[in-house]
Image (cartoon, rainbow, N blue to C red; front, side, top):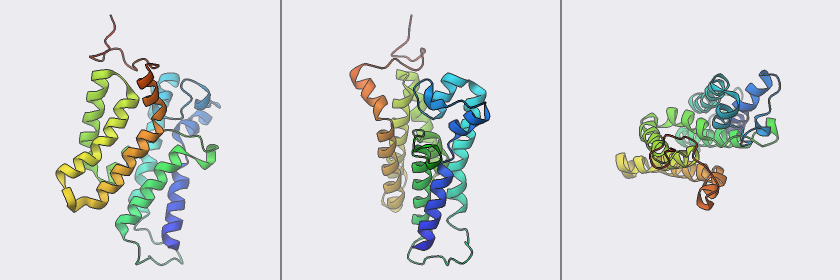
Length: 215
């Protein structure tokens, strides 16, 4: 269990390196949590700070989802023997969950982070790269249809476990459990977006969506 605990802890610390807050400090002390929606994520960064800022944020947040999941499960740690009771598959999922959680609740930034979407992309790129196809198709289709980024993100995350069931069925039971939990977590982190949609308190994020076309 020592190996599991240490690698999960390292993954959480890596996840806590929040891209929007880090880039904001490099940009002269911009605290993304005090502008726009107040969320320390790529969407708010794009709206308030521009494309270059948002691109740097996305590179960091996606990259930190890739590296721990790709490297840590098979990495030999000095003085710590691999735990035979923990499969490499479950260790991978544990590291993935920790890095996502760290992004949303970063210890380096007072536990106020982003909503996890970009880091989930990085995690999926390692664990189930083909799942990115239905996720991105769902995201784009939802955004073009109704214009809400938050709803598009929630539905994109939900599309992944559906894809796992359709493509692999019972053969990918562990992956289904992991992706279903991630989808629920993404819905939780986007609960304010969903609540605003239900109460009619949110305008579309884009104007060219088919159902909310202005003019």
